[in-house]
Image (cartoon, rainbow, N blue to C red; front, side):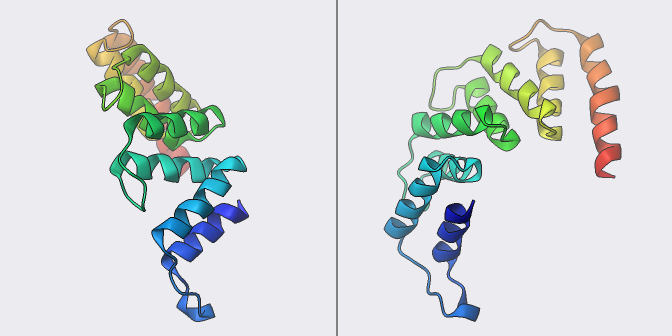
Length: 152
């Protein structure tokens, strides 16, 4: 994780230690090294940057999805939600609501309330999974209620 945090530190600078902000090119190089080292937070950040076309990265939806999927497979819940959202709506990539549902469920199982909310929405609308109001209600009443208590 050190490479990732160093990239962020250099991006923003740190006046208390006399560290000036770095250029976007330097940030990209540092972040890419953190991704190559397998840091899931770096994968998520780079995916987010590709998605929005920020921090020196061009907007590139397929690369964003690739980073989100890689981080999701390594257990990063927010990346699973982000990849699921891209696939669910077909944002810059082919629409795949079944895969989106799987990713939302993965995110939920990794502890994401947003993931469970999206699973419920999929069951309510029948997108990516057969419609089941009963299953949607059950997940709402159990997983979301349980998760709120844990965070409570």
